[in-house]
Length: 228
Image (tube, rainbow, N blue to C red; front, side, top):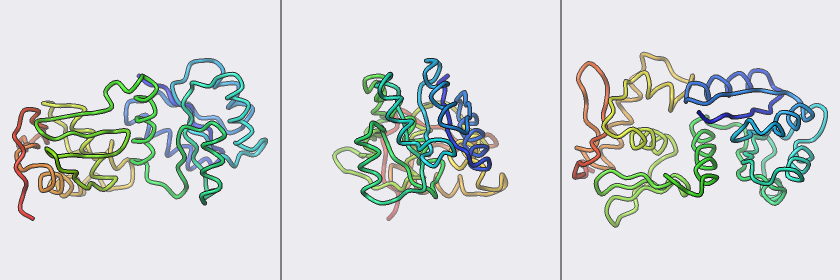
């Protein structure tokens, strides 16, 4: 189980992040200050850090700089309200592995964190495939045969979940909680709608409906595009 250190002083956001990561199989710990962030990060118990820049005691960039002085390999994903190219460039050049601005969607943040973990393992498992469909989770690129398929961030997150569990039945509740987090009503049909989008783009036989249970990715299916 991967362990994430969340450095965020806004309690509502911190709670949302912690619940979201735990729902997706992470061990999550939250701290609210730069001093605690450095203390916890240096224990070696965490696989990735999600770092807010607007901390109450010390600027997040200073935390990043001090962390990089002692640990250059721990993946750090910045999460901040500071938008603009100059802030993004400063964060990445300061040692961050990725940069996400608020407001944000949890599925995008989750995908970026997972990508950093895969990259930290030397890229192992960064390309997922089923039949003639491939997903590159680092570049966020999907292909069907020799053709690139355009997927939205939510479609890609759903596809990545299916491709990470080939042949396994995933319930609507599992898909809703892992891809949409706590943003949607459990009774919503949004999962069924997005499965329909994936079938249309990646192949009608790729994702099968298991009546009364959920959906299953058929790893050896020969995808046939749905109607345009």
